Length: 234
Image (tube, rainbow, N blue to C red; front, side, top):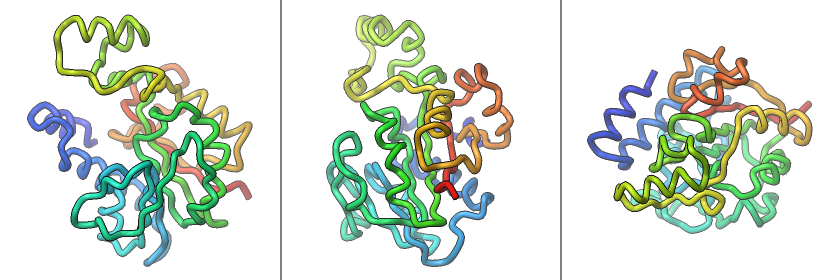
């Protein structure tokens, strides 16, 4: 369980590069337990990569990584890596190519059209490729990101109270760059309207309690971040 370490790191250093590196290393550990990556030198896409920390950790394992996001903000040490500009709410995915592993970490809750992405994600997977999808669902303790826990009062009242309290300036704005998502709805959409099937699911920061993901109401509140491993149907 990495949650206590992450909470300590955030309390003392906020969300610095090491905070995200810890997340990536722990997520890769979970993927390896699922047998991912399957072979040396496989091709991965770090989709919505930000600074490329997750992909950078994969590359340390010998994985060939392509990075993609709206703008290139890669860390200096990987600036020369292959990069593809993409807007997941607007652009076609096919030009990104097909990959053995696609990582989409902490991106889904920032998409205005998450179902559009999910319905097309199979286009960027090889026949035996897998998608690692993780995001912070709205009803989790961190669902409002920096204005948590006020998000429990709604998308209007919660941020307004946070602002009135004179806390740190707020980067996230509901329905602008942060959108309420729900684990149950995402799973239902995957089952009914995508070419993907579920391989494994777990609360990202305490994967030992994967059984929580089978309890509909509790998972919405107790899973700080939902991690899914998906593959192409058939």
